[in-house]
Amino acid sequence: MMNASTLTIATPSDREITMTRVFAAPARLVYDAHTKPELLKRWLGVFGGWSLSTCEIDLRVGGKYRWVWSKASGTEMGMGGTYQELVTNARIVATEAFDDPWYEGQCLVTTEFVEADGRTTLTATMRYDSKKIRDAVLQSPMETGIVASYDKLAALLAESTGA
Image 1 (cartoon, rainbow, N blue to C red):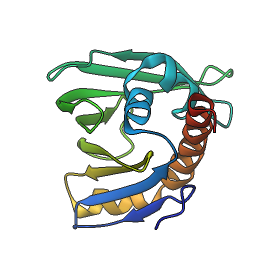
Image 2: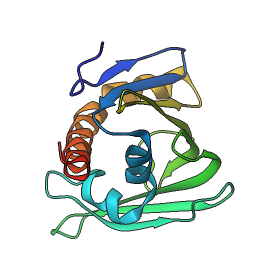
Image 3: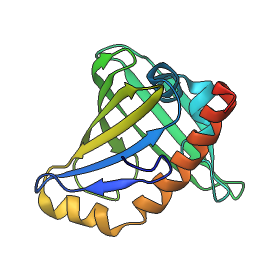
Image 4: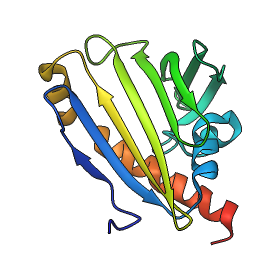
């Protein structure tokens, strides 16, 4: 069984990155933390002086989301996309594109939430336009950011569950 605090990264195909982590919370809470702006602002990318200053979500198929991170220095990083598929407490499929693209094209992100015994295995699969782009993302500091964000998410979920 995977350690709850361990992020596993795999490359299931030439164009994909899969990240998996187990959270000690039911799927509905982990899903809510991915779909409710007031919760996302507490964990997603909020480390190293960054805050999630804009978090807009139109949670429906065809709806758009928009996130902007800010630093006190005035630096901003924005991204957004469109929801392709939504299965409450189980699955989110959405496109992803950054305002100032640090990789070419866009990404399709499939996030799945599988609950067993009150714990949720979150699996996020990112599909890029090419192997070259996928490999460039793997070489970026993405993993450090994901680990920091998921650690904040685990702490937020612990508050919600009283763990």
